[in-house]
Length: 477
Image 1 (cartoon, rainbow, N blue to C red):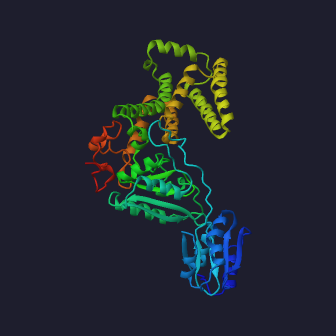
Image 2: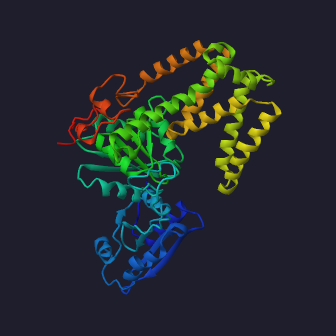
Image 3: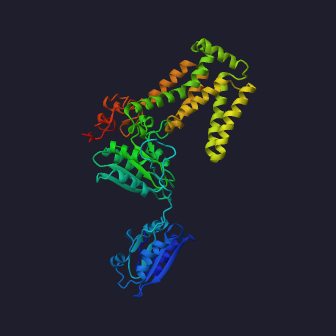
């Protein structure tokens, strides 16, 4: 470990050897009392205007000695730190914070004049609400923590920061309410974060693999949100939150499956409306997963499942189709997934036109040419729309839909039932950080059912969820 010496020239050379990049610059100057100073900074990410106003200008007229405390008092920057370790100093320079060295002192001052490039706070495009707050997290962790602080004005809110990534040194903020969050959960999350050894953490999604009890599970085990109000509400229930620098998506632990069927708007509308929309989301997802599978199964094995009039209509539609029902459905599903992926990745003005062309031209042409039937297109289109009723589960449910479709084409209705039983067994046996994934249904927790699929009025939610294990149960008197 190398430390700062009293030789300014030697210390500057040592720091430049550790940071040989061309954009790492040095600025040398002297004060009125002939004290020599050198500022080492990263040109692209340092606010040079602030550096000049808060550091260089005051020191040009500095008339004191070489004591670190005296020099620090003459600086006007509100963010000053001291260090002797060259490793720490080089990390700060790379983070955008200049390092001030001077002759005759075995210490350096780190000045917080990092240039921050941020976008404006706006409503997240993935979580739009008609009623309620419109703010969303952005890519700067300091601004995100300020949004959390603004909503939780209590000394119980603890925000602990750590750096993860050998090369990126990404700042991760661990947020929780002391006395409300389960202490064991906080310690376990902290331990798992400290054990992460990776080159770079460009987004919060990189951390989900290390925080999950089953990293390769089909079902996600870490909650996500882009809205500060949801993030704070989950922390207030006893969860632990994570904010990652460079990512607008916050993580919450432990995660319950029912969370993704809830919306922030549910708490700003009457309880009967919130209950109706939650049931609608659940039914939409079930129909989206199972409708293509049961349609194929009924055609291949159980035509009696169709009413006679519907059966005659379907029979007329599929009479000249050259493919089997399962292959036809897979073909339409493949085309839908390709159109969906292409419309997302392409520029907006092209993506919208592509969606219209794919839906109208390709669909109509395929039916007219006799490649696919009209019922198959209608079913896949309805299934695709139904998946977006719960957007946070699209990745998982699209795989489940494909799995059920393959099982239906191979085994039929009994295969769908067995596959569903296997998925259900997998869900009820999964837990993370002591919380069962499908709670409060398995195990059945009566009081927590008041804010599950059915939502009671606010006066009935005086206690925190028992599932999360918080010792501070009461949140309302």
